[in-house]
Image 1 (cartoon, rainbow, N blue to C red):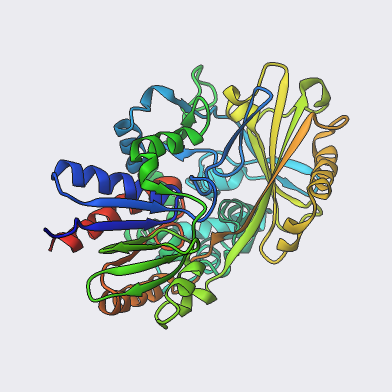
Image 2: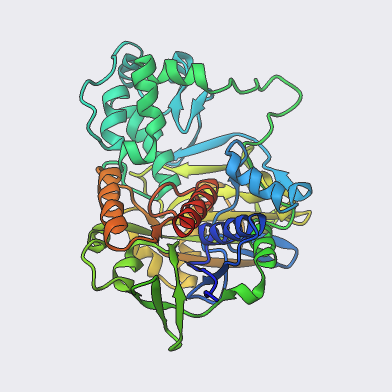
Length: 469
């Protein structure tokens, strides 16, 4: 009797968990005698999802939410029976801190990009000359050359330097912890390229394709675009772990080396063990792959792909310590500022369930591209740097009840110009030289949690199809 087919998923972040879940689901539905094993090098699952419960606070040390409009996340939530635990974020004003002044994020924008001429004209972040240059997007037309370009080059061409640096860059650099002068347009935001092609203007295209936000005069606030769970994002990790089954998960065990055999692969583990598998799903960061396949040159280009490091510092206060309470959910800090923090979320306002009554929860971020050494400062040093910035920006009084510092070293892979072409070539060579090995996760095809869930499901189908053929 033949041995049952085996699958191994390497990496226990949300991509690896999703791939394992969907593999198991398909195998059960098709009643196949196949087995799936998930291997994680660290002592925990979830990757960049890490929820801490402390003194009545729910603290997200990594990602804090998912976009509700992205179907893969909601589909998985419903399948796992978690829909009754969903909470939407509270909406409110957001700001950009320029100099020592809070500037309201102009209304009618999408990721800092204006959706109307009025949005440009109302901005306090750019000069009259800068506004006229930004409005040129309305008649500038599209670029004929279709080669990849950086996000900065694209937005500079459409809107000029002022709107780029004072508004768009602040948001996009904050979201991706990256240098938009190097980030690939096609890999990061192909929808903007499509809008330029179709409408000849981003302002016109966004106005047509993004729903108009509710006006502030309405009694009901617009529903939040993001969601989490009553007890934090860790809820989905816990449910996936329970559904997959402890017996199918190996923690604190790294894969040191992968050898191709006549039939399938052997995975040499850090504890001396060996797993035999017919297909391998690689849901680990790109820079870990060349070591596991050291006998192949095809993955060496991954060693040149940058990944940035950041830290977040969560601070809990008694409400009376906030001298200058601000009406909003947080602020971003412009790049050319004398602040160390890059952003601050007023978590108690954005996610009220995270914080006990009478308390305040702030989450600040440090680590700009090129200034990442700050991440290696001690917990006390980082907390003091953040407090100094907050005292200056918000007139805080006294010290926090506690602080929680979390570092994400090499945590944000950067899709630099030409990313899609390089990745396609690597996958093409891998399919020929090591068929049955699949690359998936935030290093490749999207970094948001819904994107990673979608990748996990797609890769599970590809791996199953490979074994069934």
